[in-house]
Length: 177
Length: 121
Image 1 (cartoon, rainbow over the protein chains, first blue to last red):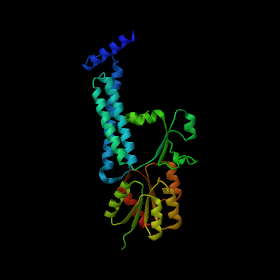
Image 2: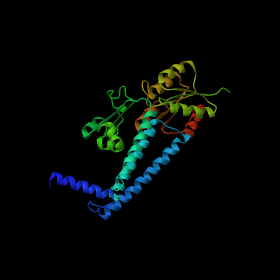
Image 3: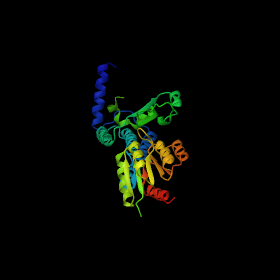
Image 4: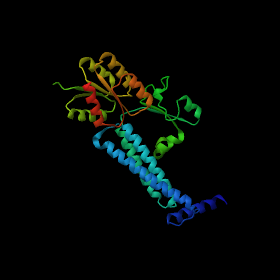
């Protein structure tokens, strides 16, 4: 198929999907069920995180911005997973939902960043196991690694790239990744 | 009876503010510091019953505070709190004779109980 034909087909498919006509391959029932369960599970997890945040911020706990950041990253990742499955279930008929979600996510992250004290963080993203082994493994706390790699930093940790992307999935554009 | 003095060291203001508000309700005299350096200077001037310190801070960290307090003010108990809880940190703190070690978020009720126990010892 020529490039023009491909473009025309994509344009037509997009238009049909926008008005609710399914054009893609039919999703097998077991995959649909798996996605449906994923939506429910991730929604439940999101509610659990929201409840935990609500309880912690009620005034009965001493918490710091790391807690807020960590909890929100988990919530955001959970919502993202739910949305991804919802997209499959609904044949991507609600693209605006993702746009709105991303906008809310950016606002919340911005608010958290503004509330944070000025901190310098280092995250080492390692593609191979060798580097992680040297740095004491994934999710290692680099403050415990001898040699002063953390000097002058407030937080220093290792992560695998997929794990880090998962935890920061909604702000990739901001970080130029 | 004189009020027991509690020192809180944490580089996040919200932690010190919340701790101060809660502990003052219990009748303690509370002083908060955003870093260890001025806190250790203050310890030279005044005796504190308990020092509640963050584990990881810029400059002098919580372990250094623990070592200094234990060496120079053995009667003062140290309670450590941390957002980066791991077993190694807890073991290191326990070896340094920390009174208690809490991962953040810390239940204020538990912190109060720990301070009470520390002051009774």
